[in-house]
Each structure stands twice: as C-alpha cells, then as structure tokens.
Length: 248
Image (cartoon, rainbow, N blue to C red; front, side, top):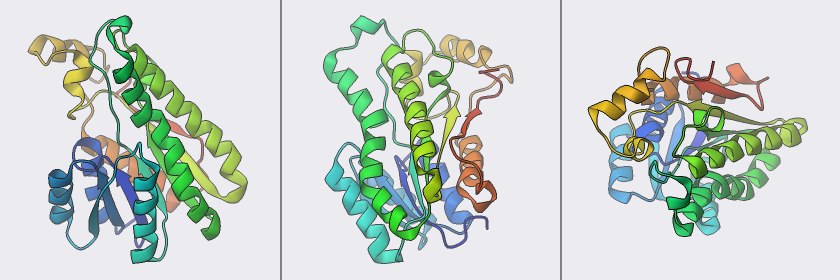
C-alpha cells in the first residue's frame, strides 16, 4: 500500500503500460482517474478496478480536456498528487522522409505538447498544495535510438529534456518530475515500432535486449509505483531505463 490515499491521473490508461500502471496504483491504495480517448476500453479498465477508479475521456493534446480532468480530480477527491503522462504515439518504422507532416505533428502533439499541457493544467494545483509528482513515460528511443523511428526517437529525447528541465525548475517547490524509459514492449504500439509484426521482427527486437525479452506492462508499473511513492521523495529529474540492459 505504498500509494495509500494518493490521487493520480494516468493518461493512456485504457491499454498497455497505462492500464497496468492504473491497476497497480489502485492495488497500492491510490484513487485513479483513467484518462484516455478510447471510451469503451477506458470504462472497461475503470470497471475492472472498481470504486478506486473513474474514467474520463481526455485528448491529451487538448488543454480544455486536461483542465477538465484535473478539475474532476480536485472536485471529487479534494486534491491531486500524481500525474502520469503515459499516452504516446508513433509513426510506423520507415525512412524519415516517408513520414508526412500530419503524422509528424501527431507524434509531437501526443509525446511532447501533452507534457506542456499537463503542466498548464496540473501545476497550479500542485503549487497550491505545496507538492506533487509528474511521471513522464519516455522511452529508450530517447537514449539509444533505433533506425526508422527518427521522429518518434526525437520526440522522446524531447520528453527526457522536458522532464529534467521541469525537475530542476520545480525542485524548490517540492514538486518532483521523473521519467521512465521503457524498452519496446507488448503494447498496441509495438507493431508500429517494428514496421510489421512478424516472428522475424520480434526476434530482432528481442535480440537487441541483453536480457532477451521485451518489456511488459508489469515491469513499467513496478517502476512507476516506486517513483511516485514517498519512498522516492528525494528523487527528481530521474529518467530510469526499464530495458533489460538495452541502454548499457
């Protein structure tokens, strides 16, 4: 129960890493707002968690949606403790010039602009409370980029930079900002990372990880619980690889 009575928003929580983070947070004692554009899946996750979870539709590239989710957290629970920026998007694995402008804009809107919008919405609440924690789900792509994912890679470099920059600016206010850098895992984005989902492509991705497997949602949720708990109260600006040795 390391997150007892914490109030958390988890974006992209209708599937993949976000779903498991939300479920694990609830098991650790938190109340969780499932924030996602996938309404049916989001309501399913909230229903599986039970009374400790609420679903709200949220497009993370829209400031009005962000403000509504943050206001819901405060209105219902009286405060907000944690924001997990998990929602992510990628273009398919392909040569950099094959990615059109609209796809590029979508990658940066979800992976980078959403961090700015989360700060616009949640930071005033954290400041009023004198504490708070942002956890950004970045990627090993922002540490050790793979060919064919140029614009996704660069968006995750940006997410790591945002994390460190926010951390150093907000540290005097006791507001922590950390990130996780997962290696490719079993999520809906995996096919896009690989370009196509074939046994050969999966074998190639697994071969790039010294421990010989992809990440799992449980791997990421375990690390997220620690970084968002009071056990990590003196950690900020940490960008933790959860990668089976990929970035060593």
